[in-house]
Image (cartoon, rainbow, N blue to C red; front, side, top):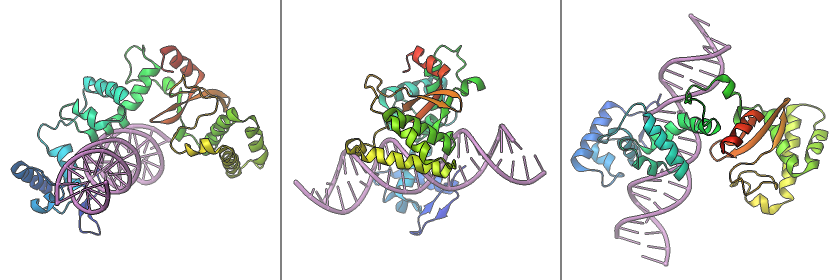
Length: 260
DNA sequence: AATTCACGCAACCGCTGTTCG
DNA sequence: GCGAACAGCGGTTGCGTGAAT
């Protein structure tokens, strides 16, 4: 579950903490406090860096730290605070006594992010939020789970909403049909598109890719229809997950529920 | 039974803001 | 006012575990 202990080139111990180390750290802080994390490991007789000691203390050793499963109330609060505050885990942690920012962050990424997404998608679904059926799951297609060629097709569709000539150009350039040439063709077309508009290129790495048809009225989301493998899909942009592909059924649900 | 895959989580890393000399 | 040191934060990684094949 955790990284195996090892000594780095500076002689600092890394990886999982032993019981003995925990005892030393806890005993030292309970006696002397932690005014200087950098000096603390030396004084406490540990071969750790200050950062590592601080993290261990904050997440596991400090008094009143709560372990184990999150309650429904805690989860609801995290979802609400995340909606209001964004990824300010340290601030969120102050509202959940006994929970560390790291623990909340991990719990969000492994459990709540998906749940929050589905809650928005199926707001009135007979309180079966943790028991989504396979049918429901099939309505969401995460870009990162798609194969390269799928991604290339989606990228193409997005590009084609900006320039009608792009798709034709790429398809012509990739008549050999291999995925490599297909990808190269997409990259080539994409590069030329970007270099033709230096203003938008400046923001390329920091802003989500949005076509010129993107409307400010939809702050985070925009609709782009894509025929992917005979399934009519739509896409929207999510700050956490990037581009999300959904089929027309889910898109309708999301529109109906006010998510979009 | 063996292997592969996905998930969960503890811990690390790098960046930013704050404090101090 | 400036730079160094430090603390804290958020993103990412590594690996154990259980489920799926």
